[in-house]
Length: 226
Image (tube, rainbow, N blue to C red; front, side, top):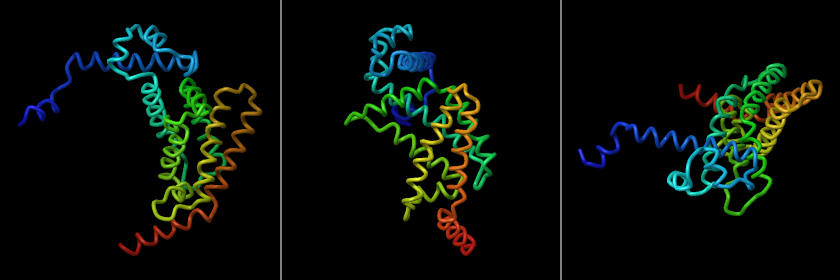
């Protein structure tokens, strides 16, 4: 076995664990600072003070706060995927969708800090920055596609349905709005109405026979092969 292979399979050391803990502490501190100060108002000095670290330690782990932003966004999108995959499908009732939206609201309440940062950076587009909002929409539509044919029609590799894709992406925005309304609004009557409206919109999309054609054909093809 070569030295490179031995190094790649070595057991993590206490130093490795300490480095991972320090890195996570800086990420957690950055999330808090970004939420409190705004991403554009936050500085590396504020982040290291929050983390109880030093500037050299920060730069040992991260290039700049933009790299931290990227990791926080990536982790946020990933944490949302299990909630998306709980969509009661493939053709749930409006009531089932309302219950699911309240679960999304509970998730967004836990993720207020990152959700607010995503809103901030999405509103201030920069040429060289990844489109975090669009990346989140694409990832969540793909997750929902595993639960419902209508969303699957939006991401088919061959002949994706343009109307389904447009509706699916717009619905992600509506889902996020409903979730944020649930987590931030104290007016119960308004929250219930907002959730009902989005659930109804989702139900119409999921029930639209136009977006089940591809799934039906695929199912028939699988049956034929058997």
